[in-house]
Image 1 (tube, rainbow, N blue to C red):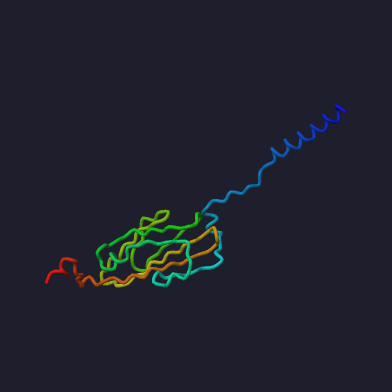
Image 2: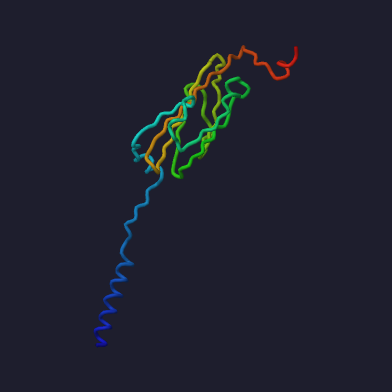
Length: 157
């Protein structure tokens, strides 16, 4: 009887030790590799001026007015998201994009002051849901010859 118990414990112990020593098959993928391999299931294109009928898990904050009246030559654009695993790419037709961060970038108006329009395109990748959003921000700049009245000038008669 003692031999059977010893044999049983030996078999159980051997199985336990062999399972602990077997290599794990867990695969670790670099985030950038996953990004390049991920194919979005669909691309949703949204223009900032459109009605917010499309639910988007991203919010883009930009001070368009200061740029369009040429009060500011650059602004920081901030992106927030309700999903944890996401990334973005950004481009501008005429202006300059710089200082790319994890959730922000700096947009600078075109150097040519005769340039009156620009469009910022932000491609937002939602890796949790496999969706790709294309968010467009149209900008129309006032002419550098146009003088915008200040509050003080508007009140003086």
